[in-house]
Image 1 (spheres, rainbow, N blue to C red):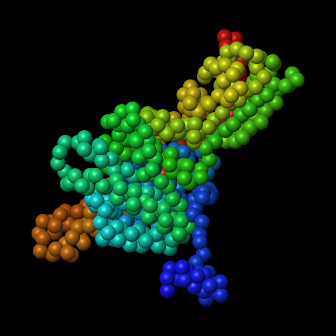
Image 2 (spheres, rainbow, N blue to C red):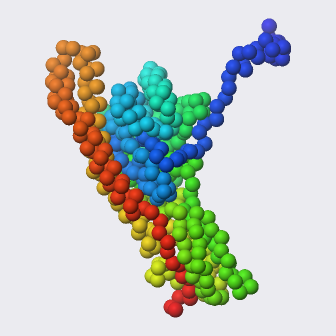
Image 3 (cartoon, rainbow, N blue to C red):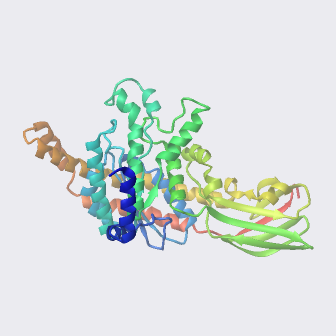
Length: 453
């Protein structure tokens, strides 16, 4: 039977229904398109040392604190340096399931690939453990959000002093290995109906673009761990791929036939009054702009973060040509032109507004929260992970006295861990309580008038 005859036979069998039973049993699922968040929902960020850095998670937390100030989400960092999917399974009950998450973001794979070119047996082990992890997430009633491994910066590695555990072949191919892992995760997310975030793509794309101007550019100077700018790229990818809103507020005003009128989105406008060349109004916006710490500002610029995900726009049409002062609560925050006001003034980039300053206080408190109790909590889990790893090593090599001694040393650090974990959780919650005292939007009096008045 030739190929054409085989195809004809297959089509005939399909049309007769002989193959339909098997085919009809497959029901495609749609991957998660956007988060469905309610007050009290918990999100766990599960990962390795890149999550343990408490940076991209911190920036995403800053987004939630400022964009949804009336919604008290429970946000938990579950990153541990050196973690693989295998390690995450051992701490899953206390470090993930205990928080009753609605969503669990999963950033694992950098260590699972073993910093080498692609090996099928290594990937098989990784995929098996990841599937086990996804089953555990499903069993605890949460939805997993799979995130690709981040970029391995081979150029940054080559610019380091010679040496290390990676050979030239591994350096050349490891970023491609991670891309393969990420492509598999995307397929798994689609098949299982899970969330998916592409971190590898934006990190590589921005790096490639910037190296056209500066061949030494990197956001990953040690080749593995993104710096604050790279972690902003990661946070921006999460906000975008998880379908989160990009608008803080939009306020529009128009002067027609001697009367000012207004429209708004995510803001309540009241007490509107004015004359042909000026206006004044009260505004209660529903959110604050997204402001990140100083060390993250390079990433804000590289991603266009404010323009894309923190749009706070003031538009005024009908003013005579000229230069105008924008005052908030009686203080000038910016000077602009009638044309810029007509096109829409991006307030999120005006650092002198009370809203910006308020959001900056949120970011600073959250930085303290992450640098303090959150990292303390994560470091406790480093000891636990080392204990589990050394237990496995000793089981495989029972005569290795050095491994036994290391296991004994780690075991000495474990007593009282649960009490220390609870204390760190309580300290982190106390700072979050402060955040929710200062992140609530406040009404402000806006005035637009000719400059110099």
